[in-house]
Image (tube, rainbow, N blue to C red; front, top):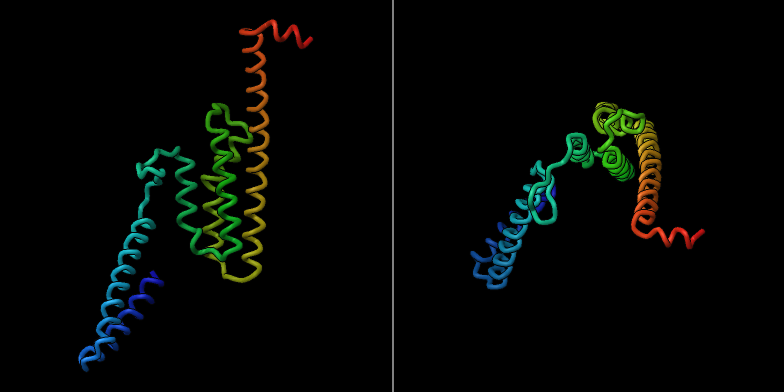
Length: 196
């Protein structure tokens, strides 16, 4: 919005100044005025397109069709969209990394029917911990200490989510290998005997 307003102000000033040149019969001013109006139109189209992208609430896949996200992941995406633009660059990068780690943990624990510690932590991070942390940061006075606190707390959440991802990934790898052994025993028992 700020870029759009600044661009509109510059284009408006240029149009006024070049308009005086056109009124005095300057051909170069006429060409520059036409070019400025064309650039202004392109800028307005870009700003409109960008505003629609920012306002759109449904997550999109590359084909443009909306995708149906699980509730916790949708809430996580909503938290990301609501807070990432207001953060300074280092905090924004840490916030995005934490959100991605939380999303991965949610996906790896989505099929769990029992509420184990990993499942609880992933869901709690998406539902409460990250939104509450961002609300607390937004209401606190902005200084170096506040930024440091935010980064420390984001690293804590990210570290826990990465441990969940690692443990769950290793468990799923073991399940896949066990399934492979089962299939090999079932469909190619001779190969197992040859290995012994």
